[in-house]
Image (cartoon, rainbow, N blue to C red):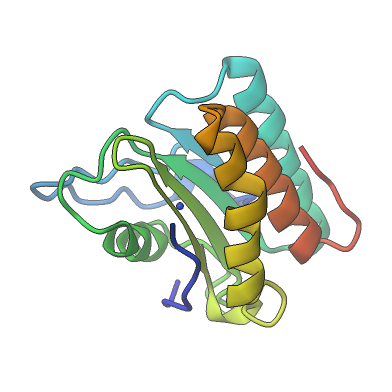
Amino acid sequence: MKHGLVALTGLALAGCSEAPSCPSADPFPLPPLTGRVVDNAGLLTPARLEKLSVALADTERLTRHQFVVVTVPSLHGRSIEDVGLVLGNCWGIGRKDHDDGVLLIVAPTERKVRLEVGYGLERTLTNSEAKAIIDQQILPNFRQRELAAGIFRGSAAIIREIDDLGATP
């Protein structure tokens, strides 16, 4: 996934189990890609995690665009932009010939959230739309300490942007 901005404040993957594992590097151990939702910060209940995973799988099935949600307990001193680029590239989010991946990253300790959007989706999910999703859908919930709700509302808005059929969580 190439860098194509995305908004800062804060996929259906074909063959998730076959995704490459990322090398660990100090000071930030990169989490392995274990599914469409990688909740290493433990922000989602098992039921919500499953519901979001199904919505992301449905989105990929309908659009072929890959969308992954990842939460990390801490950025360990790295910028969220760096973490997003490394994870997007390491995990190979998006079809290689289309670069159409989306990565929603949440780092609750640093109170950061970010969307990484592959170049192939930048016309569909523009920088201004990504920023609006973060500002209007995600952050209001985060400010109320409702992180799971923010992840769900943000994911639903992202899905609406990339999926005309609207498979939302």
